[in-house]
Image (cartoon, rainbow, N blue to C red; front, side):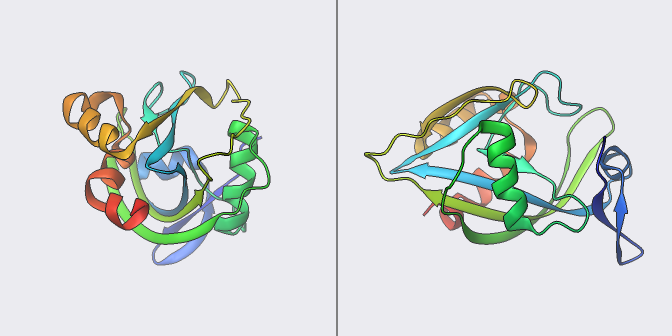
Length: 173
């Protein structure tokens, strides 16, 4: 069953169907998580079954809180649902607002709570990606990600390109 997400309509936060939010380009809360290990970050390739931005590379987790759900609990829930990653220490990093055309006449206008988890270099994370959510994962250095975005921008989601080009120093140091 499709849970409604929150969106601002006439400056009032209301529950709205997620697809409707994107069709109308309504401003809405979102959550993004970055897992960082040294100078590398964990990327996910979105599932081919996603209704927008399928098969594109993005940050570790990007999602929307359910109506009434706080952003931290959403980040924890989606790490588990998408990658089966549990018990990480997430820290709020920053809030970012952006608006981007994500194809198929859909608009993301998000106010994003960004969380980061610093994983010790010697630690390993056991992940089991949910194939309905994630096609693939990989660790990449921040420098390599920025170069790859310049060389092949079409393989990355619009929001991830914005995060990396405009906010990578704020988010990732």
